[in-house]
Amino acid sequence: MRHTQSDVTMPRTGFTLVELLIVIAIIAIFAAILLAVFPQGREMARRAACVSNVKQIVAAASMYAHDHDRRFVPAMTRGAPAPNRGYTWCVILQPYIDNEQILVCTNDSEPQATVNYVCLPHSYGLNYRYTYNTAFGWSPGSLTSKLTNVDQHSTAILAFELTGSAPDPGSNYLWHRLSRVKARHGDRAVFGFVDGHAQALLPEQTVQPENMWE
Image (cartoon, rainbow, N blue to C red; front, side, top):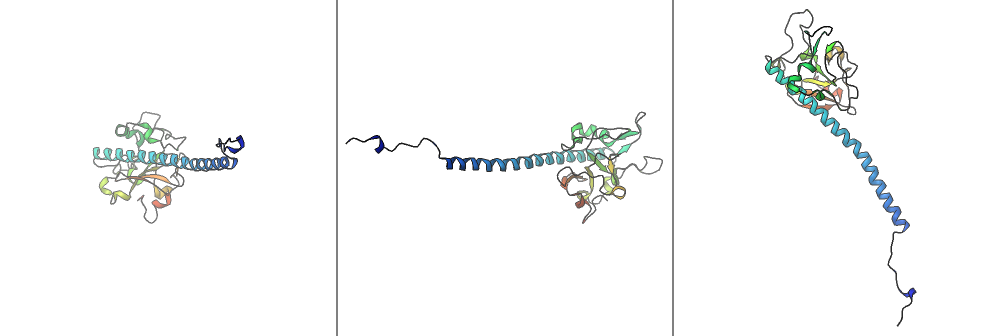
């Protein structure tokens, strides 16, 4: 028996329009998901890098303290050649850090150096509660606080993300409150603590329910 061409079922060689539309829709959904996830992943990586920077800064400050009778590194000192007024912690800690890039957050496009001081561009500041040089002017007294003067090292802020508009490299909560804290990671800023750890927090979390600046 002979079969005509109409009696033979020909195999399909392509997609129907509906199938193509389904594939395109699936690709579009995956693309939308990836576009949403990639920026979040990039920001998480930047925050992690910032946390690493702050950890290294507080580690360097700890090494400095152990070399200087347990005293915290001063945020500013005198003694620099004219016309500079002095040195900032950014320069003082360089022998322990040996990396200027650690001083800059990847989300800070315009890191500033303190004017009229020997300084380096930086995104971070020190807590003056422990690092302000009490003999910086003409007043007598110890230069900075000692590690032994801090009760709870794990909740005592030493370093934090500093706003670029600050005229000097740190902050005192009694004087400035949170005005010098810069939240560069969404609504969070990175803080480093005397015990050596660092984490991203809402600035308000550093004063409530406990004031971590004092």
